[in-house]
Image (cartoon, rainbow, N blue to C red; front, top):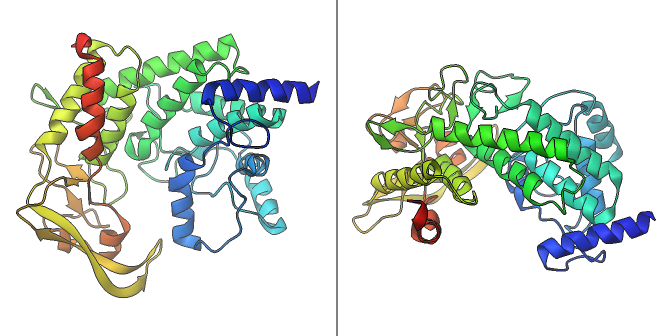
Length: 380
């Protein structure tokens, strides 16, 4: 009976994915959602360690369960494919007796979604239960004042309780919750009562994103990286992340809003306003140049490169990470929370360990938004 149930679950996943990837007959779940966590792990520990192959789904899912805390959360920045020795297993088993977790760096919602697919492939009820615990933890952490999600609970830094847009926290949670209610085959284990609770959380979260969009006069702009949960005003993140509109994070929110089926006029207006703002703040005539520099080990990364901002009349397609909410000037800062004017005034550790400039909106503006707006022209 257990094998039959597993085959039926695999068939359900195959019907959704339309492809075959493993010996079980179902597609191997992607580890792409963990890319940010793996990157942060390797920044500190290097990349020379044994890992499970991507198609070793049960072993990876077992790791994810081992990392899960008693109330359903997960700590951030772990590689789920890492092969653990006995001492590491014991350490994580002790860690699992704690509570809380972090939504930072695409965490928690990625694990619960992976476990749902692992259950569909294997039929192992432990993965279903782990996914359900992750959903329950996620719903419990939604911030009542607006409907977004915090960075980390329990808070150990001043910015942890803020409604967090950075690193796809709120948008990423909402995107996964939408899978819970729409992917009724893979999430068939979610009963009607829980699905209704998830939908309520989605509705509150969507309304929160629309409420938090920065306005410049009567014009809609982008989103800040984090907001004070009480005042709902843009707030400071880490010491070098001053209150501002976040270019990269705005792209993530827009992509989430564009994923909503049958968007309301308010959602369409939010997307259109954010895209127009991204076009207004594009930086032309400058480019980032990376060049060789003496190797140096910092606390959280090592670098044999440095970066500089170079004038180039032909350059385009560059955006700042942060913009002043009032005048759209670029916001740069040191780890001492001192705002500086020039890129070279940021110490090398932060120049090489943080993306102050990037091309994040390019594909959104050139391809994704035009396709979306042509599909939803009747909503305008």
